[in-house]
Image (spheres, rainbow, N blue to C red):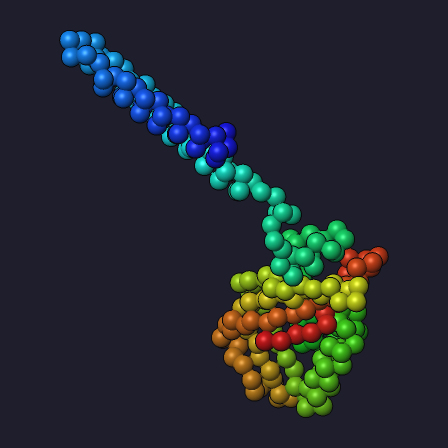
Length: 223
């Protein structure tokens, strides 16, 4: 039943009640009992029809709400991020996030261990040059970095886009870590080995849409 059907039903109820009342109200006075019973019947009929109309309205509204809740995601307006993610062949959000978490830990560990070779396979040339320069400076000053990873408080995709047939996905990581920087005498010059920091990073990963492997490369980092 449509909205129009419901409106028509309500109009019919009103007309029936109006006509019955007009007719019954003009009966001769000598038939009071018959008139009274007829009016009661008319009111009863009207109430039944009105209740039926109200029931139909509630059913219609309920079906409308259920249809809206079940509306496919594809029919809903999509923002830039969701549009981009749908263009990535075989993309799976959970699998990507799990992979991003592992990459975060491996890259952080490789950086602190001055493992340039491992970094070269996981990050872009631009990021590699920046990390390599920090590593070089630490080595010259005979500094060593230590990071004890505690846990992820958050790992969430915050933006995605397609640029020149490449997918770029930015992930916000909120992690708990213990970070310490020591000098050549093994003295702490930065950080606190007894203090857990909550750190927020945004890393952006990139992969060609036609890539043969599922590997993503880190192309930028920011706090």
